[in-house]
Image (spheres, helix red, strand yellow):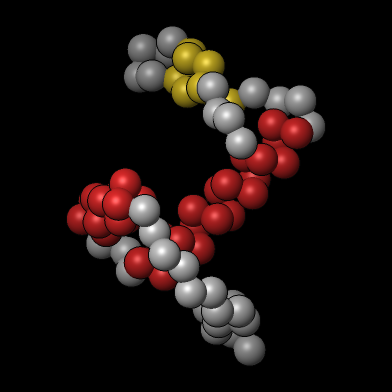
Length: 73
């Protein structure tokens, strides 16, 4: 089985905000919905694990200024 072959299927109902976010991401990236959802879950899992390990999420702007991102999981 290739890495891109589905190994599990989930049928989900998205809230309106998630539908809008998915549409904006599709417009910006040109990726398929399934690819965006797969990536989103992988990012969520990574961030959740890092936060639970006591780490923080920071964003750095082009001027080198850091901003702490508060994420409530």
